[in-house]
Amino acid sequence: MMRELHVSLNQTQKVRLQAAFQHLSDIGSQASSGLLVSVSDTIPVNNEDGILKGHGTSERDGQVVATVCGVVERVNKLVYVRALRARYKPEVGDIIVGRVIEIAPKRWKLEINFSQDAVLMLQSMNLPDGIQRRRTAVDELNMRTIFEENDVICAEVRGFQHDGSLHLQARSQKYGKLERGQLLRVPAYLVKRRKQHFHDLEQYGVDLILGCNGFIWVGEHVVPADNEMVEDQESTLKDKEQSYTPLEIRQNICRIANSVRLISALGFAISVDAIIDTAEASKSSNVDIKDMLGAEFYVQTAEREVQKRISLLKKKRG
Amino acid sequence: MEYVNPLTGFRLDGRRPNEMRQIRGEIGVVAKADGSALFEMGNTKVIAAVYGPREVQNKGQQMDGQALVRCEYSMANFSTGDRARKSKGDRRSTEISLVIRQTMEASILTHLMPRSQIDIFLQVLQADGGTRSACINAATLALADAGIPMRDLVTSCSAGYLCSTPLLDLNYVEDSAGGPDVTVGTLVKMDKVTLLQMDAKLPIEMFTDVLQLAIEGCKAIANYIQEVLLENTKKLECMRGS
Image (cartoon, rainbow over all chains, first blue to last red; front, side, top):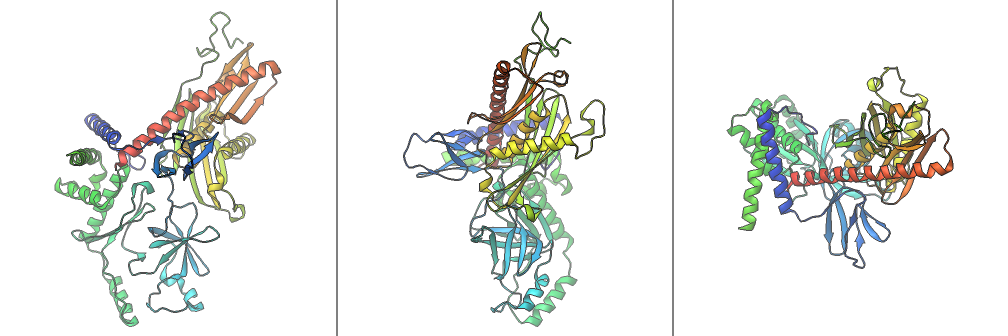
C-alpha cells in the first residue's frame, strides 16, 4: 500500500492503522456494489444478447472475460472494466499537466503519463502577444521563449490525430507555463474528472491544478494577466522576476503538497476538499510541515477518513 | 544420490514428489515503477518491475501496430552461494530474457498499445532452482499491477524426473542432479502452453506424466496469483472510496 511513502510505525500505530484499514474495507464493501475482477475472470452477463464489450474485456468461448484488474461497470448494453492502477487514458477536454521533454518543428512534446508523448502544436496555442494570426517562421524559431525543455505546462486534450498521436491545445489564459510551485505525480485513478480542475485556495494564496493524468500542480497564486500592450507585458515580466515568493506562501505550498502526497500514499481519492481538510487538520493539531509525512499524522489521516466515510454513509441512509 | 527416499517417499527437503514449495506474492514493491511484484517459491526470490506502456526510447524499434515488449533478466551477485561475478550480458541471462519476453508477449494484448514500449525488469534476489518460473510468475503479477491488458494469466512451474519419480518444482539440489528439468509456462484458463523447455532427455512415456505434473503446478500458482490480484484490487478500490 505504501508505495511512495515509508513510515516506521510503532506497535500502537500499527494496530490503529490496521483497524482503520479494516473499517475502510468494511465500509467499501457495504457501499460499492461493483463487481471486482482480476485478469482472465469471466464477467457474468446472464446470457444477454447484444452485449457490447468495452475496455478491459475480451471474449473467450463465447464468454466475456476481463483483461485487466478492476471494477466491472455497465452502461445499458455496454460492459467494461474500469482499471485502477494503470497509465492515464486521455479523453477529449481533459485538463492535464505535463512536462516538456522535446522541442520538434512546430510542436512541443510532453510527458503526460500516457503510453506515448503528447503533442502540443504551435498553432494550437495562443501567442503571448495575444494577436490571432498565422504562425510565421520567426514564431517557430522563438518557440523556446514560450516553453523550454523541462517546463511544466497545463493544457487541454484536443483529441487523437489520424495517426494515433495525442494532440493538446492551450487556447486560453488559464493554460500555459506553470512556475513557482511543485509538481506531484499520483496514480491517475485517484483523480476524478470534475467540472473544476483549477482551484484558487485563497486562504493559502496557492493555486492547485488537479490534472486528470495524475499530475498535480501546487504553486503560487498568479493573477490572470489581461492582454494589454506588449510593452506592458514586458515590464510586468520583469517585475515578476524581481519579486520572489514570500516565505509564508512557500510554506503553504509545501503544506498543500504534503497533503497531496499523504492522500495519494494512503490511496484515497484526491479532491480539493480532502486536500484542504488534511492541510487544515495538520495546522490545527500543530503538525509541522516536515512531520506531515511522519507516522503519527499518517495514522491520524487514515482515522479521520474513516470518520468522514462513516458520517457520509449515515447521511446517505438517514 | 537418493533424491527420493525409497522408504518414506519424501524428497531431500521433506516434500512429497507432487508437492510444491511454499509460494508467496506481493504487489507494489518498487515505488516508481508502473507495476511491480515480488514472488517467492520456497527459497527462490524474484523481484519484477514493469515500466510502461511508454514512449519508445529507440525510435527505430517503434512499431505502428503493436507495443514493443522488452525484458531484462539479471541475477544479483549475492543470489547464489559462490558469489560469482556475473556479467550482465552473459549467455544464460540473455537466453532467459528472451524466453521470458516471448512468453509474456504471447499474453499481453500488444495491439491495444500501438507505438509504445513495455519494459519488464527481473532481478533474482535468491536463487534456489526454478528462477525462470519464478520470474514469469512475478512478471505476470507486475504486468497486472501496471494495468496492462492480458489475454490470460501466464504462470510457470518446473517439473523433473529423478529416481524414477516425477517431481514437481525442483529446487537447486534436484535441478543440478543432471536429470531432466521441464519448465512449462501456461495460459491457464485458455488451456494453452506458451513455454516448454527441457534440459536432458526423457522417454516419451514419462514425458507426458512430467508435463501434466508441471501443468498442475501452473494451475495451482494461477489460483494463488488470482487471489493476490483480487485482494489487491479490492484494497485499492476500498481505499479510494466513492
